[in-house]
Amino acid sequence: MKNIFAIAFFSILFILSSFSYTGVKDVTVRKIVIDAGHGGKDPGTFGSYSKEKDIALSIALETGQIIKKYMPDVEIIYTRQDDSFPTLFERSDLANKNDADLFISIHCNNAPWSNEVHGTETYVMGLKNFDRNFEVAKRENSVILLEENYEETYQGFDPNSPESYILFSLTQSVYQEQSILLATNVEDQFKNRVGRKSRGVKQSSLYLLWSSAMPSILVETGFLSNPKEEKELNDKLQQTYIASGIYRAFRDYKTEIESKN
Image 1 (spheres, rainbow, N blue to C red):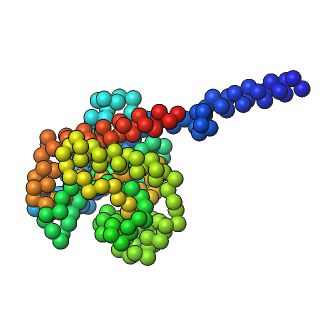
Image 2 (image 1 turned 45 degrees about the vertical axis):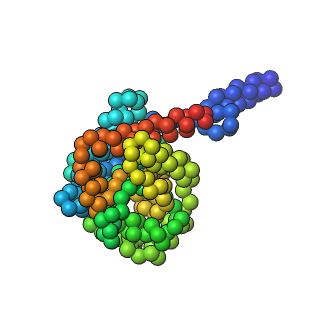
């Protein structure tokens, strides 16, 4: 009987040692996937002289380099490091298979109705203000139509059909709180440190975020339809500022999440 109690006692100690005082398993942020939006045959949106895929790649690589410099213990995984075309499924599947702790997708925005609209937006998965953000979801998800056998891969999901987005409403992301925390950090950095206009944190039905089993955000770094902002987004120094803002947002997020242990 004493042996049974001893075994039970040490078993409980072993289990408790892997949990924090809150009863939740300790959380660490050690592996991050950085996704440069679009690529290859998918140029993304256009400015008067530049393509989204090129700017997104430059900022994504710069972000990874800065994180690696100041946080060498964090593993960086890129969905692409050249002008290749990974599918949306392959991007999220890469993150899921590597058990990443965080997914950050970097993009540029477009407002074809006005060349005066400017500023940054950071998206998390959600259906809030669906009608208002549907155009963004449709644009970012439409890359699916460029993929071979997309009907089979995405099980009939049509990025141009509002009805298809019912799929997203059936799954409530358990990572939304953490995603909103990171997205808020990003927009705060852009506004207060980088000097860009922040249009805030928004929710949208983006396949890339929905299919990533981890906290995930999509960063719209600016509008290529705005001449001034297009020029800034193509400037290497401005790209470094934007990347530094994303790094600081990630650093603060990591500190806060791990402090809860």
